[in-house]
Image 1: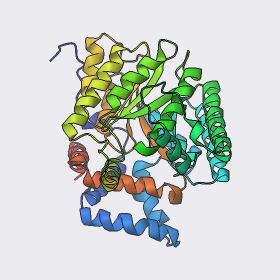
Image 2: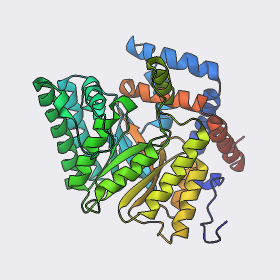
Image 3: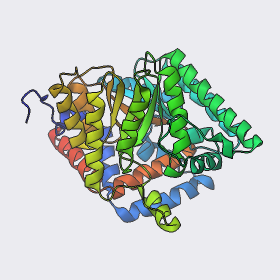
Length: 406
């Protein structure tokens, strides 16, 4: 162990839960205990969307349990209260307008306006340096799919979109997508807010990558505005990160948000059904290896890459802090940021903040009915991720005992 590594421990529950009152801590204990019961989660994730759809009066129950744990609020003003509370502990936020994409030009235009509204609001707050967007929020899935299928040559310039496969109406549609993206990024540049472009399914990812690289080339020439999300549970993404860096050719700074990934079961199932090789790593160890190598690659090129370590893996976060010390990179270097989801891994977030690292919570917000898909994913994730619920619950119980709340 390098002796210069920071004295940081992700087991310190006093720091991890300092922002929670005794009552909030007890609520979190109850919620994670419930999410540990697989049958309860399976029933809940099936019934809840249906109950909301048919208008059963369950919003109050959701608001006081899973919504409060994982979401900032229904409005920006409510979310700002949570953000300010986190800010007291030197934790920033990545705002996420948590409404899942609804198709149709009118909806795409509305989503664009909402993204811009969020950017402008964030610029008035001291704790909101980033927001995340999904290109599927303002682009038709099938259009992206058609463009992705045309991108057979992956070795060329990553900013190329093969629009020659589109008919005239589709070309006009794509132009509208580019204009929406341009409006969002331009507003962010003007407001000094960073934009994190979410990853999508592999079969629509190529045009998303290309569009994101185009925006980076235009806007990441001084301050870093645009970040691409790179999913390291894909076996080709470490090389993609290196290729993306090579494309910058010192002209602009690459923004890279590193995650493990979000669509594993769907990706494997589709590959099997359609008879092509799975894009997913063969095992977790391969994912972990590529993730940690990606972090190291970014830190090795820290002048030309702005890195967000977006991970719930304790070793990956710890290793990143050690590498910063080994390479004598300051903890508050403007090109290094850590992030975890709101409501999870507080032991990582708040201990990083206490040690002087730039760290944020990914903080969704939106009407309860609209964020239900996000909440159901969090419930399933905490039910199915090996050891995740047990780890969260164990840390909460440890803090409950430390505070003598039993």
